[in-house]
Length: 209
Ligand SMILES: Cc1cc2nc3c(=O)[nH]c(=O)nc-3n(C[C@H](O)[C@H](O)[C@H](O)COP(=O)(O)O)c2cc1C
Image (cartoon, rainbow, N blue to C red; front, side, top):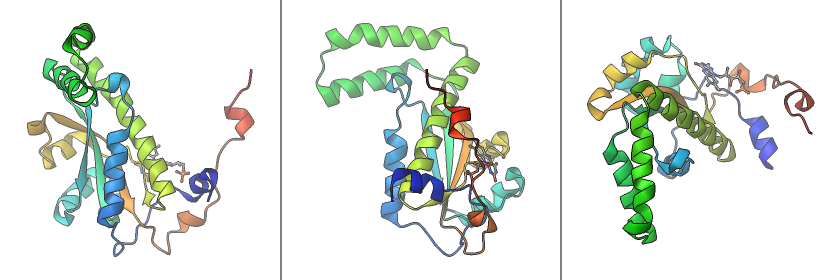
């Protein structure tokens, strides 16, 4: 299949096959894809929770406007952002560069100090909005990877993040939930699978100058 065929194959899955679970290797592809997502400066102020527990997902259902995808899918991916970006986040990042690329502190230090300053200038709200932008990139990346891997998924904003944070104890991890992606395999009788894609014409969304 070429990539456009894969993207036409994917759709926001409404009914998952409860009995069809993702293999550990497929799940690993999604974890790696999330981690490989490009982020601004490379700072990675986002995290992903893989929720398999049926009990936890049952608790989350009423906080998802009872959308059944989150319980029927093989796994529920919850994309989170850091509540605040600390000096340590920036320091850990530059320490990692130092380890991986063997770059000297003399070269890195001006960039390190500059990024610490940039992060400090932002309010907590601005930091969260900035991280949220990265979270959407991760969502798009995961959706495309799912399509290529023939994994079904449903991007979701329709949930109550504060309730998710409570149920999943995210505050103690310094995280806030922002987006969901249930993943698994479509049920044979999901009527949405046969619906034609509704999109504008390419010439209406893409302009060539
Ligand atoms: C950011 C985002 C949030 C969405 N939230 C929900 C949701 O809460 N529940 C749902 O069933 N679909 C949700 N959708 C799915 C969209 O309705 C769907 O992607 C769109 O109608 C295009 O259809 P397609 O993905 O099947 O091609 C969301 C999609 C995006 C990109």
